[in-house]
Image (cartoon, rainbow, N blue to C red; front, side):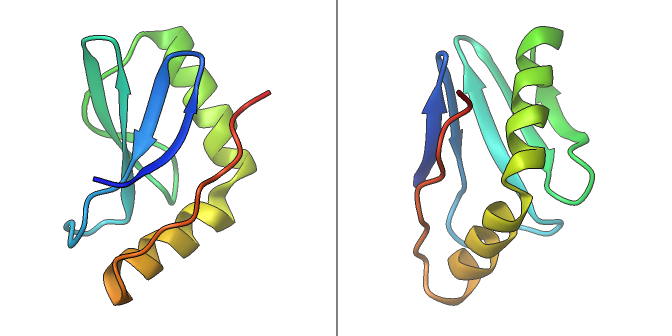
Length: 86
């Protein structure tokens, strides 16, 4: 599970050969969630509201990179790190 980014205790990653729709995974302490890239909705799991807000803010800033990483994972299994929320 390649890590894309880490900030404020939040870890964002993608799985190899994961299922559609395009999404990424988030881990924060004991919380985990899958977030759809197209609209940043929660597909599965739960995050505290403040953490979800930070993740969505970050994802909106990097949606192109997230889509590129999703496509790259499908074709060659590689991802590029994405800058954290500052």
